[in-house]
Length: 126
Image (cartoon, rainbow, N blue to C red; front, side, top):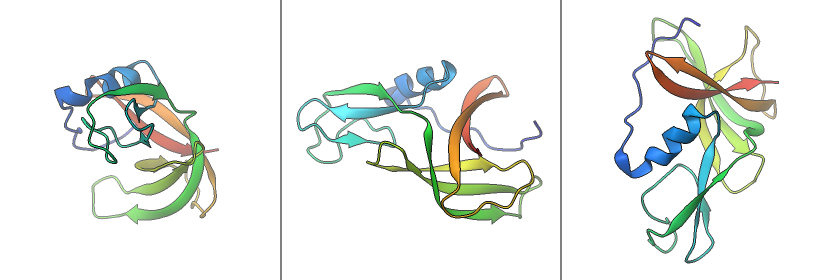
């Protein structure tokens, strides 16, 4: 894979998320106080601000809500907004298209890879 990217900041507060990615699991959080499910990972619930939450696995499947083609980098690529199958959130991610032009509503699934010894994820068209 020819990928040029800056690596994400991996704060200690959400290290469990990155452990999940290393184990090929896409994780979200659920507040133990109010039941709110949320993504992206955070150190507190966006609804009630509680810091008491649990991690759970997402299916890794969804539909493309929107996308853009990034051309100004040395490696042009697509970035999309994904409506996750579970329905409570959207994920912004690189989208691998294998040469196809994506369409709104295209089905996607998460794909895991390692870049510069760091586990990462992206979504791919299915």
